Amino acid sequence: MCRFFPLWVISSLMVWVGMVGAGTGLATAQTQPEVFVKDAEISPSANDGRDEISVGADAAIAEQMSSVSQLTDVQPTDWAYQALQSLVEQYQCLAASQTFQGDRALSRQEFAAGLKACLDSLAAGADRSIAARLNREDLVTLERLQQEFSAELIALEGSVEALEAQLAQLETHAFSTTTTLSGQAIVAVNAGGFSGDRIISPLGGVISRDQPNPTLLYRFSLDLNTSFSGTDLLKLRLLAASPGSGDNAAGALEPNLGSATDFAVPGTQQLSVARLYYTFAPTPDLSLTIGPRLVATDFIDQNRYANVSFRDFSTQALVNNFLLLPRPAGAGAVISWRSPQAAIALRAVYIAASATENLPENQQLLGGGQPGDIRLFPTQGGGAEGGLFGDPYLGALELEYAPVPALKVRLQSSIGKVLGSNFHTLGANIDYSINQQLGLFARYAYSSYSDTTLGDIRPNYWSAGVALQDVFVESDLAGMGVAQPFILREVGNATQTNLEVFYNFPISQNLRLTPLLQVITHAGNQSSNDTILVGTLRTVFSF
Image (tube, rainbow, N blue to C red):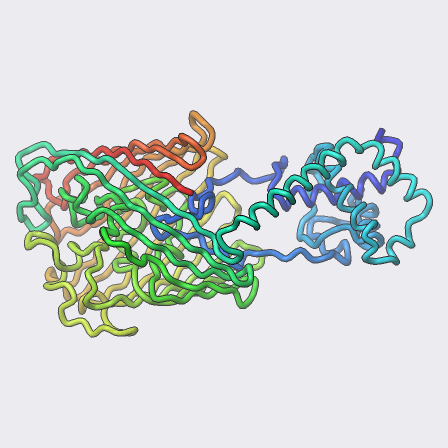
């Protein structure tokens, strides 16, 4: 049994395996609460433009550790210090890391994995001087360890061989050696209505006297992700979708202030290029992105619980900060930096949109739309200069601080020009994981627009909510959120409030079904508008 083996061997292997386990995300007594994983990370399919870009900047290259002093949580007074020092400096079996986590438990399988790695390293003979330093006692101990853990070692070897065979088969039948193909189909049934005899716009125009008809929404997308070096990404997304934000009851009855179903916003029935950009990492902590088709929300204003409209909330005002990014799509560039300790990250985005292009994002709010809509600017594209530094453009900066894995705080600022008016917005975005199942989120923004049809205005925005994971079945997700997207006394005589509840549950690994309910009170900031209720059954198939 293990108790007969020399203490330094057992301690060293336990230390080594403990660090390997920590690097692979195995649970420990000291591990922080697990946070929800964005669906975009689970399945890299089209995701409303909210791709978690971590190419190169967060990648770690395993290097051999040369001194035990490289471990920040190991002190010379620790009981396993000498054993760990022998393993690192005499036998060089340990890969570089910053922490040791010596209090974590390990299973026999983990122990066997660590033992096999050390045996393979010695057997490979990469450094003959190490093998030469093994004495007879060491060899006897290794032989006993091999006998004690023979069953686990055989099982591990079989697993490795099976994985190698599967990998070879995948490489043989791969779409491309450098490119991966993923796709997604969203199909949703939507129906809703309002009480009262009509719905009016923020400026008093009649939007509808009739109840909207039920509709069928769809969005199909294909992603081609290409990497030439393993730390870069060339993304091409092709997209086709139902007509636009007016094809769902919430967007038809309240088209101005972020009530539309977010995944319906693209609104182009013809196959079009929705994303085209290239990301590369000049250093491990820095990534750069440039392309003719970018969306700012791919890179900033992320949130673990309210960010991806095919996974969590679908109301525009809950998916992203409604005031921070008024025109997020166009050509541009992104710089993303993360500190080596991963506690601080800084992101900068610049987007220049075509002045004459009919962009759907908030177009009724900013310009165009119907005569009764807000139309902060007289005509869509009127007086625009165009060009890279013309009109409209958007520049945004985000500072993220994560003192612990459970908490992320983002401070944001955006400036730009939209249809002849300069704007400046300050924002905040917070998410907090209480435990493995429960999380909270909140956003806030204060904005300033000059020379609008209403004069110089300073609207406010806020949203907050709660999310639950693994409620009834594994990997399900439920949430409730509330938002007031456009708090401004110059518009209407009340403040619009949006509420959404949803429950997303898996049918299979690739198919998820989500019933959701949207409630809109004082639509368009008008107190005379009665409550709007909208129900949607969202089906998402990813491959």
